[in-house]
Length: 153
Image (cartoon, rainbow, N blue to C red; front, top):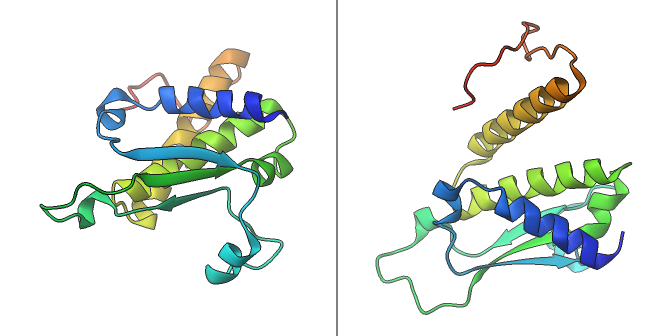
């Protein structure tokens, strides 16, 4: 996929972030790079074939002091090649970008890994329900029960 198209998909994913969260994203640069550097992976003790799809670098909101300011932007990096490597279709790329953004923005907000995983699970549940409604297929929840049209919130 050309970089321009990938960046457009990232931009669309950013635009889809609910306004109540997006309005609190301040002084954050979201960038696209090819892949994580090998020294970064070594520093994070990530060994092949494992890799990163994204990375948050900065000071989470929950760790900022009252005098935090006048600093360079926090940075969220989305790594194009690893995302493409695990994706068979453009829809898969869109899904991975969305999940990666959810994860990295969660770190910006100071959420724990467990809290981020819960949000990711809700993302997947909504996506499966949406895809099921587009095909007319019944979609089941994780406990095997049919999933109705109840409110997501």
